[in-house]
Length: 122
Image 1 (cartoon, one colour):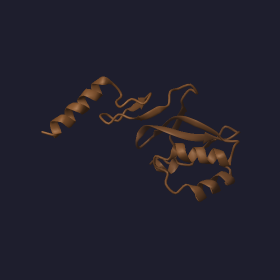
Image 2 (spheres, one colour):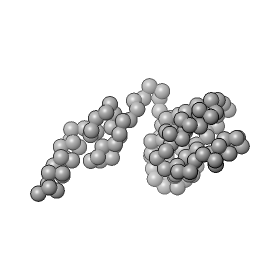
Image 3 (cartoon, one colour):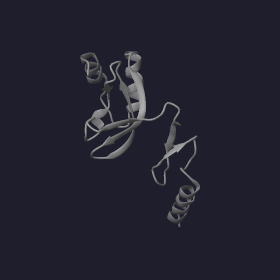
């Protein structure tokens, strides 16, 4: 990784966990030659995680938030297709990603969550 990228990360990234979209957007504003990539990172400690990272013009990966993972960026980066839908949240019942602004990933989880809340109010 180029020194200018390392220096920017060192100077600007104080908290990495859950900040990948925000930090990569800021970094690409500072370095327009970088390209933001959305996909999945396969961490050897945590498994598959949705993630944002950057690629340099030479194709190398620049991940300003890699330190949030136990594998520190030594896992596998798998980009999503450019037209893949953007998640809008996480299901409060199962934790799966939600798309199109829904409240739950599917009707089953929605009903299960409502039943749990109803039972806890008794």
